[in-house]
Image (cartoon, rainbow, N blue to C red; front, side, top):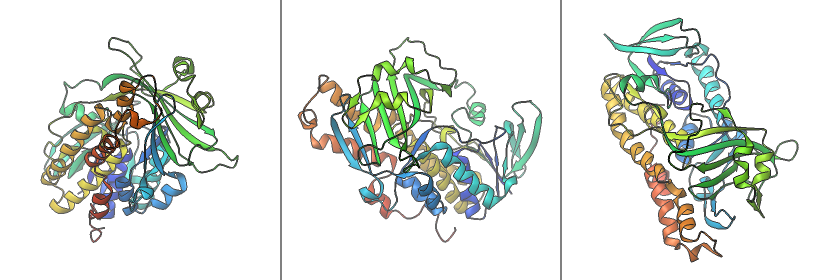
Length: 421
């Protein structure tokens, strides 16, 4: 039978490509009438780039994005805290790629349409309900904009890859409520400007309460500039009321630019980057508490539907890609059965639960907070504040939890066996 995938985001489309790769029929059901290249920048880490490479997409990633060379942390005064090589420069067999999220989404969508056919993705199909069926599961869909019936489909399995506002998760956990806001707001934008530092550097500056992140997501454009993705972040104290109901609202520069007005470093003009953005959006920083079960019979959760996490450590999309690959492997091992879903969950749920919790503690970015707490008035060199061992321990712990330690990843066999693919 056909596997039903609710949600045509990065996780759902990667799953569709993976299942097709091993000869398993599937179909993607997407709520929106048209999948558009929305969002801003995203980082795809080496363990996820490996999986996209196995799907034959590396050339497309390279054509559209940037191979990240290094990740560097700075204080709010632009002083270096910690820097480490990334991707191939760190010894991985696969690069880390910085790319526009919408572009990555369409790389996956185009590949699905090319390989599975246009009918493999049904738009305006929002999941309304699901139930057990003699051969697996039955799912009823509606057109969300009109409330008209869009059809009922039967499949062997139903995979909920329908995001942080998952309709499937809401039905499985009806008392859960909305995502949890932690008091931080992100303002995100893209600016065409001159390259900075190595030209392929991702930087994070500031601390837990006030932070700025940026990195290039394009090569040199015809005008000699590059596209820089940036994120400005501020923490608001408990009890502060912010507009939380919209997750894709246009940003108002006057509401956040003043806090970064004096962040002019000799290697980056932060306020200039913000002012010259072609677009900027406001997002509350939200996640959900980990749950103790993803799988219910022939239904399971994947990606943000299963483990929505803060965008810390560049891991949200990468973990959804890993989910899709592990699930494909387990369906190969166990067939299109509830046992396959249980085996997938047994591997992925503990790993992502730990990652959600670690991201709540700022993941690898906690080095900036530690430096701010120990030297709020600044420092000359970071080793006045933190030892080299402390810095390395923070970075290595996160790589271990997220599953992309260099030697371990390089030595690890493919998730989906090449013989099956």
